[in-house]
Image 1 (cartoon, one colour):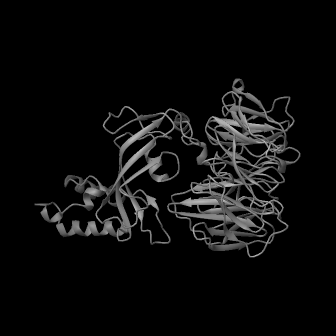
Image 2 (cartoon, helix red, strand yellow):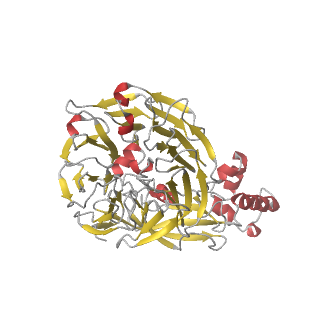
Image 3 (cartoon, rainbow, N blue to C red):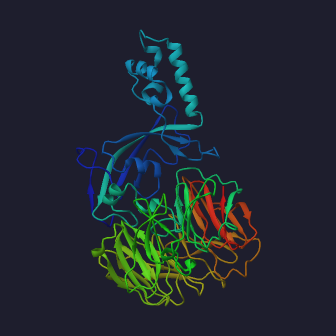
Length: 537
């Protein structure tokens, strides 16, 4: 490991707790039936907060070093639950209080101790053995252990970096706010603007449109929506609206002229932030997620308009119309504002190569890395030609230019490592995953090898969308052992199996799709040119 590490072995006392950014070695043992379906072996390693095993990582963050947890893993052959990792119920969840007291008297203090007990060797019991065996069978049936694995995950070793790996939030921020910024989905997917989204819930999309919102009530502006759990936030021709993800019904609307400005479609999409706030332009306003009430607004006299507002590690980064990047804290502390100059607009939305550095693209083919601590510039790339869009942070930094070239830049130095042009037509902003880099052209979906830029066409459209001057970024959803890409082209959204290249389903609308597909808890959200927002389930 290139970063300095500290070994926090399980042989130590429980003086410290696990934090985001810790690298852990975990032991996996199967309870009862042998391993049939687990997506990992008997020993796994992962960085907490990386999203590789979201359910397990969430349980380990802030846990003691001697933590041991039981999980259910669905049978890999089950299309509905493929590799879904969940916490099993407790005995208290399964039985009434009196029964639980009886089981406790018999020494069954956990689900595992009850399921694995050999009742034939038990002597005198206050309850019939046949009744206990029937209860065992009932629990096994309810857990569906014929198709699921029950397994125990325990910590072997933990290592801590002197600085957290790229993209991980400061653990102090996580503890204070209760969540990290990357857990608040936007069209970019996370603070690194990867465009991909990791879930531990099987992605089962049928292709039916659950609801559509828009005219005559309002017109949804051509700005990608942001979503948080059960609410989606959109710009409209009247202001900002919060809609239910389940039904599309409006929960609140803000029409304050200071927030809306003269042309809201020029503002960045709302950024869902920490402490129950969203942060929006054209002035930097903090709106309460539940009510839309404005808690504060940041509008220095020198500003005419805010371009992009983005969020990472309890800080808000803002680019205004003059190309000045400003950094402030979410608590609106005036004395923490920092300034940095970024030459040449227009600009793409900001991505973060770590919790301390912001990556911004300028209109002269340059890419900049700035410290969000003090505003100093870390590096600037030489002009690569053309205007660059929103970068994506992965193994390297990736960005596409309007002259149809994809670039890869080294994070620490800003050196351009490779560039590739696979088509003589425009290509979308890139999406970065653990396995590759993806972009959409007028002809299809393409994958690029991360280190070399070698290109592969994953899926070819049935027709060439020659009028698609600015192809839309795909939205990629990763679950355990599977990746699906949601690709918008013309009036259609395609769901593509990234492993096989097969098109699983196509949804067609009456108008052109204009925003990147945004995934949130089993729902895909897209906006069409007729001013409507659609929820695909």
